[in-house]
Amino acid sequence: MMMLTGKGVFCVRDWSWIRKGGYMEGDAGRGLGCQKITAGKGNNRNGSSKGSIPSCCLKAGASDPELDAKCHSTVVSGWFSQPRSCSDKSGNTAYFNNPMWPGEAHSLKVEKVLYKEKSLYQEILVFESSAYGKVLVLDGIVQLTEKDECAYQEMITHLPLCSIKSPKNVLVVGGGDGGVLREIARHSSVELIDICEIDQMVIDVSKKFFPELVVGFEDPRVHLHVGDAIDFMRCAPKGKYDAIIVDSSDPVGPAQELVERPFFETIARALRPGGVLCNMAESMWLHTHLIQDMLSICRGIFRGAVHYAWASVPTYPSGVIGFVICSTDGPPVDFKNPINPIEKVDGALNHRRELRFYNSEVNFSHVDLSLILLATISQNHLIPGSEKDFPKLCYVPLLL
Image (cartoon, rainbow, N blue to C red; front, side):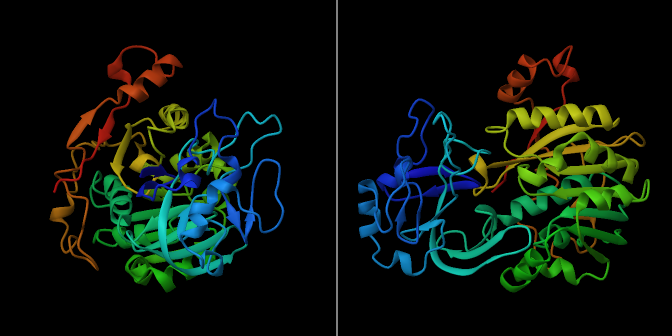
């Protein structure tokens, strides 16, 4: 049975506990009793005694008698599933995994749990999957896998850097796994790469388990700042950066500040005239209201271009991840047609590792309006006037 999950698409066995995991409103409470088993405890709406397992989970439990011996709280019968939040007191709202993508279940077959520990900020989990290689999980949410990280890292980096001529000073917000640094390093014109990552443990764990990503930290142009991005941006010199890349976690909890007006204002202030921002912006299939808010805020702050781009990343919600890309007032920026094509940057295609997803031919090779997103935004009167005033949505297909 095929199921969509937190950050991706996975094949899972036809187990009742998974099949009931993703339910629609109106099925309130249906299947909630079997969505998470931790240390032999079956969780249900009314609570359960230690060692009890809901009847619908017996088939899953019987399939692997050793499941408890190696389980993380998100691993049941050898499958990682992004955890659900609790239902409210009225019982009207409950999610299988995370309120960022309600009504969906997301599972990966786990071969071996490699690392699990809590940092000062979050729980960090690394496991070996059967289909996607090693997987990095923060607070129960998949951040990257070895198999498909290339699509995200290459797109969030080269969309902005290839849109301006000879970028020199670049800032990365987040990105502690090092993948964005690896991609920035392909650009020989870059002289300074600042990175602000709040969690040192993410960097340390990535260095241990994801060597293909953390090679970016070895570049002498990289300057690491461990701390809060909000504070870092407040102190950033005006007009210092040619490009800023925000590789943040999902905007829930403290990360909510990273999609609000004050943060975008500090980014615009830190960019030079004609400087560019690329900000992770979730999935247009699941997060239209969040994207609507981000576009509205950015159109009021960035006086150059404002676009929404997206690409296919199988292990992200709905198999799609989006990016808000903006430029400040100054020299015009054409995000559709790269002025600094990656193919013409000396040594860029095979720096450290060959490019696997991005090239100039797929850089906004198809530009169109998403009717789903356009309809949502039009209904909420975000953009007055005609369709031509609406920021283009840029679809970047993978050409095989």
